[in-house]
Length: 81
Image 1 (cartoon, rainbow, N blue to C red):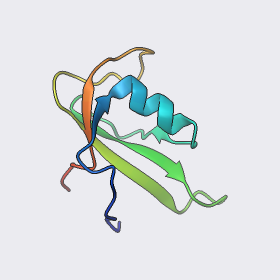
Image 2: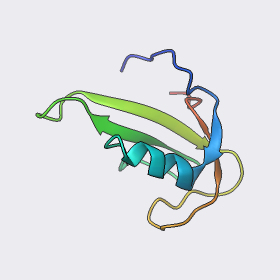
Image 3: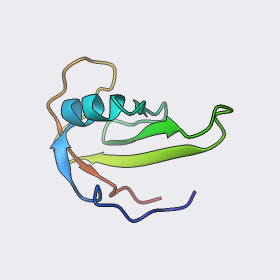
């Protein structure tokens, strides 16, 4: 994985808004999410071998990517590996 500099780093937004805005660009919540962090993923090629990944962390509470409404504040681009 290659980290990229971005203006998205350390932005704070609700999980719902971030998920809905990024869905317009074919991003989905990656399958390896946890209750306090996760990734928005988007394939960059048709073979689905190259991905763009935006990490996020919960700033207050637990994430439930399975529900339709989660007004949880997130901080993007701040997950450490």
